[in-house]
Image (cartoon, rainbow, N blue to C red; front, side, top):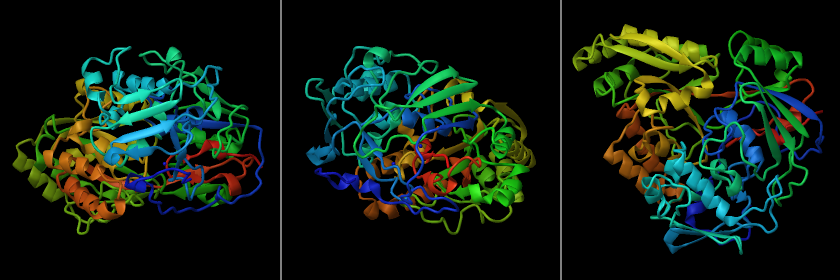
Length: 550
């Protein structure tokens, strides 16, 4: 999918409820005097895009959050990383008009890494780019007055969004919402619409040559499919935000996860964005436990999407059949034990999470009910239909796709798999023209609020023609209204029970088949200071800004 300064806050900022974090290794909140400088090499399967408004993978988010600073951002620590602080804004927003108006002012004297001044109007331009290009994150901005009208006009460059007032003279930014939105402070912390210079940010994809930003690092894309380089911005000086620790990060793009892990073992890489899997996992756990850890952060959900606009998944009976049939124990084995079975759409650690007990589709820690599933498929009239399972090539996902294909065969379908490169997978299945019937997906927390899971993933308002995140295309009026109503308040303590009720309703309606929450791995080379610099951030996952050498 993140301190309290001298500012006038309202109840909307209650979204900053702390998360319960679990760790198995180093802690970057130790306060130790760590080493600064040096160069490291990071292995990754690669960002899906280097353009911030189009990126949606964790492989993109981790480096881009170092390059682009939003108006608001998050503390860097592991324990307090869910807490919002000013980014390019000089203070937290003043919220008035019953939670519908946000006022901020840019810090004075800001310049992008290319030397051009940061202007208040650049923020509006970034939002306009997101809407015009059909960003996956567009739905988060639809509550701004005039945003929908701008999109309906085709997002033409030069048009205005009436709800954003920006003064380049004073640095003031005022945002008017159509209704209160308790998640909007977190939206202001999205890297995806961090200000970039309007003159160098045209309305087209910039993934090959991303625009300048104001961040702790600059980025050079040497070759999108092979290498990119982050270099520390020595002029970065924003009070409250720590500069990057290492001087240079060279990211090597490779598709083979096992090779990335082996390269960390051998010291050719210092870290890999990919979780340790397969035969190497027990080796890493047993031999290199002093520089390896597993964490449930960021909170996440893994599930099979089922597109209700396509047969056979237009039938609720079929979708229920898949939920009954899934054996999460088999999937736990494919994840090497790093998966925790679930019957929830919300993951543990997110406000509003309550285990769905009893689970409507059987014990998630027990076997699937194949006979029940076959009966439902028979009753649906869809038995024997051909189904394509969409998946991507990052381990263990091909094995998960094979498992799902075999499961669909067992309950009465003729299934096959279609495996894509992970850098293009989500754009492909998120395009309505693809008509992807079903496949693999997951969601990692962007901000600590249940709306981050329900809004983009199951709300009908989030459905779009391209870069669609609601892959099931679920559009239930009751669910839509409950999401909208719960978003209006930031009082998560008061609404937690309502979010839990919504979670159960979404699961019972079987729009998707959630099966587990993954524990992410952090594995360092011997050169790295694991004890002091291996913390896992609740929003970013691994925070590269805090990496350091011994």
